[in-house]
Image (cartoon, rainbow, N blue to C red):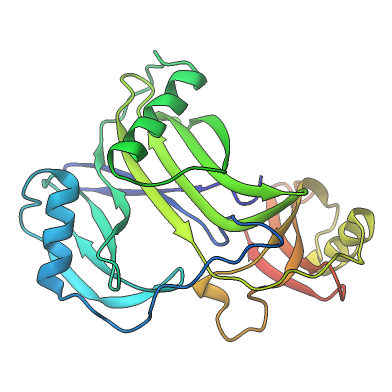
Length: 274
């Protein structure tokens, strides 16, 4: 679905970094509310590095710690490693000191020895070892082929009554040996959720018009609650939306559009193009 992690590939000297990033991750129920972390900074950069060291179980080596930037429910330090180091990039919540994402240097493998069930079990064991809860979340597993390499993308989302909420935990798993080399934990705050008045078909019509694609084809449609730093100040955070992904190959190349349709008002917003 649209909330599935989009794989980010950055080629650097000494290896390939693969990691998960998402514009709008998923999570909680229509009746429950995830509480935001306090926004005030309570840990230092040195504390953040110490938290990363404890998570890795070894010294991260030479690192660069950037000032905090927006994260789900608060802010996080970004810690960058070196191309030949033990990790690529990590984010540490400034309020809790928890490592909320990590990207390791990944061997480029096309060997698949694990089944989807085994990949899910490997990711679940990783999260259990690091006290990252997946309780009450719905898992999905996809084998992704990037040409140079393959990976299992394993994701747990909170889905209730057909609505995906902004709480998700994702991992990328080496299909040859079950090693988790990338993960992200996303739990964003949201309030009461309105009941939809725009149905799926109407949402597709509105999204198709807004996309301005010549011959659009519907790729995915999902009902979800938005809550992401990227939409701060836009008025869209906390809304129930139809997330509609479209493509168009009529012009000799593949164009794509990702459109949000407010499930109550019918208002549209272009969330992305490709």
